[in-house]
Image (cartoon, rainbow, N blue to C red):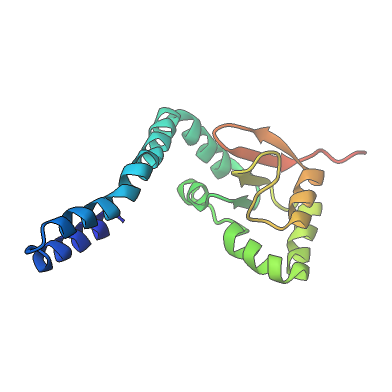
Length: 162
């Protein structure tokens, strides 16, 4: 947005240079959102600094995903990638499709119920990913327990009752 504003302002100035009030007004109109929302532009930088400060915790998470004994699912695909593991579920696309076709999730729910995934890494709290349908979140809550909560949630199957 900032780059586009600068280019548009340059275009306006070159065409409206004979009318000095118009470029100033145009600059104010286009700069106002930047001035009002500028603080939020640095939020991502603050998040990055927090993640860099938790580098060791992220590395432990990646190592734990790498060492998991069976198939894993990572909501943040980069974690599985860095762990050298494929993610069994691509949360965003799967969630989008399963939202339109609820029966599509039944196969994955059956895998969750059978403890086929040895680890599920989610960004949400307590097994409630905003990307997955409610039925799949409920299955994860029923069959999996948090093994780690920071810097992201890792779930492992609950022990089966004997």
